[in-house]
Image (cartoon, rainbow, N blue to C red; front, side):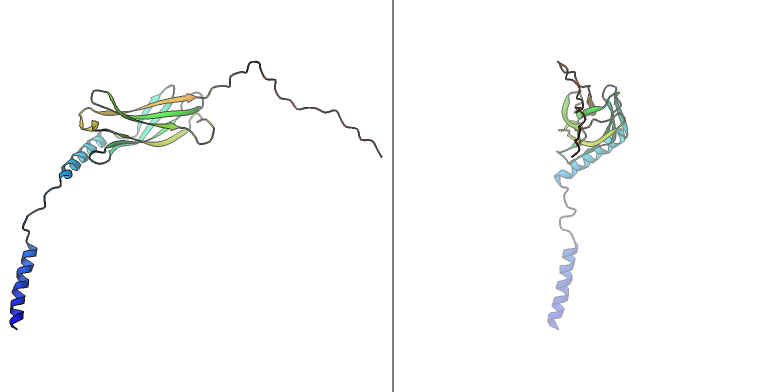
Length: 185
């Protein structure tokens, strides 16, 4: 009985000590403020860049940005762009290049990534056809400067007619043989 009288108060003191916090609230991690700042910049970027955004290049086609976002983590931010390229030229396109550029506040190129839009089989991209892909370009801290921006560039290689050979090669014809005569036996 004497042992249980000592055990109950000591357990109550132990439970009370565990329930109270000696240090108060845990201290904020050093990167939490950077993460909150990045989330605020991402929110502003989403509000300023609503998709779809069309970029027309009269001699090369059209690039339609379906989704653009500022992604990553503090110190590793990048602009992600999902797009599709449409051939709106008069001729088929052998290949098209689409670039996603990140520009500093004064308009200088900070970073760029390119995509080669080609169909895996050896046929050109026909007029009106689409090619879809995604690009990711690191910002290298440019997103922290007010006035930074991004842009899309495009260049297409149009299909050309085969150049004539000099001297010209005569067209191939089917060889004709004289009729065969079979002798009766």
